[in-house]
Image (tube, helix red, strand yellow):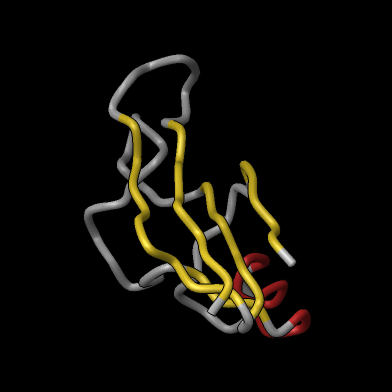
Length: 81
């Protein structure tokens, strides 16, 4: 399973939407504590996420530094683990 999108949520607190979604659906985020993956340009917050199930593995993950909206795009290469 893969869930991705503009979720407008942090991952820091147990009640943050993205963290609850990941926990409830048993999904993982790529290094949720990383500080270099900000996607919201005005304050560099990480609000856009890709969550994957345990049978998948992130091979590559990043943020595209190209302005197409108020959010930067997120990309990932994922393989079956």
